[in-house]
Image 1: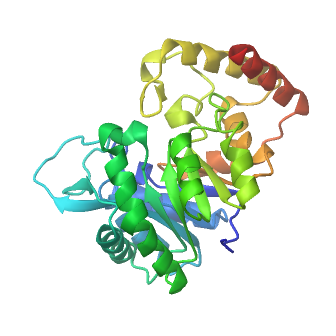
Image 2 (image 1 turned 120 degrees about the vertical axis):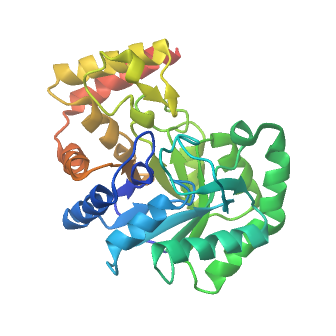
Length: 322
């Protein structure tokens, strides 16, 4: 298994890949520098984020800073003339992603990422967005390509010392359980499934990772934005899992926010700290789009949260699931 020592808090880089809205090169650079100055030592990225834009910006801003880096494989970037918003990214680089989990696809993706990141190596390599909910009827084909070739390529990279750990970066629990029965993983990055609003990973995946010694990184602690603010009055602007939040989840989030306010705690602080209360979670990563959001992130991570609030929030969750 992996010997990577992950810190409790890391930075995700989809936002500096222009997720939902454009960010300038200067702001992206300042954001990463602010994170470094704040003591952040782990950054997660992917070719998909702005179709190479996030990796390019991250590599330029980091320089030779001694940090832990994870990036992802499973998509190749092909030139395109398309513009505007694509796959949620605005004014991204002129490439279109194509899924490829084959051995050749994995190796090509890894090498291209190193070029964009201006690095000789990354520490963690994750197969990105495998799963039936993502791929539908194509899931068996992509899973087989990964198991028959892509996984072996990742293992070979690790065995050669080119990377320190391999795993998957996904939004789905079932694929994690499925793959752990087939192959050995060092790390799982799971987004959105172990949060104040969605605790579905708690029953099966979290204990299974602990049993197998798989390091668990929790991404998406704000569930794509709905938990990132305490004022939830603007329902039309609230996102959950990259789409407009449904009314029932908005109602639940408002109930959580109200209880947090009763204890003098901001909802985003509780959302960020929630996964790390579980000792089986190695790291939580959250996206930031500007230096101010970096400072907010650090403040949220350090905010005191009374134990009574956690008990109250657990009661709300249990009431929903009964």
